Length: 480
Image (tube, rainbow, N blue to C red; front, side, top):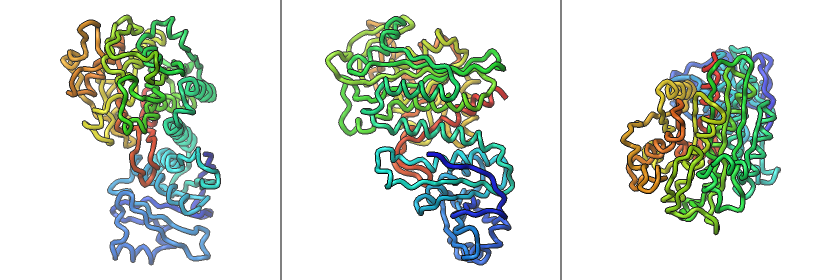
């Protein structure tokens, strides 16, 4: 959805809505007091406006004013990158709901421009691709005003659009987005962002010895794919970061069939790959001084006549054998080969993967934190600090060697489940670690955070786009 974004002096502003982020201190800008002073005083005296997070108060302007309505958007105690992201998104959602076409947001600091644009684009996203066009309202113009120059407009727009690309793909039904369609879309988006793209089909995966990846997809009539996207600037140093994503376009559980209720949202099981695609396309456009690649492992997990059976033993790309005791633990199988490919064929010096990997992560962390598991403290710190700066929270979990013991096989090198429910998120990560060739690596389990079960003031129910902005920031700060 295209929105014209620009910066304008508040004295020249004409808009349907002007949104004002308000902290709990209830300090109002002079420009707002000039036109709404009496109403503001009354709101404070009656306690109707408190500046609480997500509080929205609508003020109507006199007929002579060029701004029809003012929104007071509560941000809580602090106005920072996280709170302005949410406030801008909420303002857009509220304005669009009421038919506004031109929305302005007042910003008091230059550092708020980028997260405000990202938040506004986040709030503009509507999961409406399959609705009649006349059911959809949209914003035409976003105007930034206040003590700013708008220097960060382009970067905010690039990242905001990348997050929405991720959300669009995750929300897409599996009948329209199988492995081949996903690969084609990744190729198109990658080339549009100036990236080099290679798509590996079933035959190419067979030649590479990707037995784990192929085992997941063999029960489906839609064959698996692996996509590699590359960004290599002339001014890059020796470091080479590779983003790896799990792309299970639909997960029935295979022969270890899921209950019907658990299958309803399984189109989102490719959120890890969609996250990494969003991040690499933004990186390609922002052009940081870091070499970055991306490996997306795509397959559909179906219970067809050729499906992998519980008890089958498969050989992964790195030569290790895996006993598949539960075909619903398939994400770690495709990631095993994808991580090996990234370490050996992409020659990455650092790996980060993202996956909707375990139900256990939701039990441990709910939908608030992304689980962060790593074999390298420095890399984990990069991810965590980048997230904290913008309000995306990553929580480190332990990776002691003892957690690997339940994943060792009796007839094989490894097994794909531990045999009990203890520490499921950690044991899955320990399994993945065996395919990194000791490359510095971080694993992001987004199973609890990649999908919003309920709408938020700044977002509809559905794909969250979590971690895209943090990963882009990792690449930008790495090279700064």
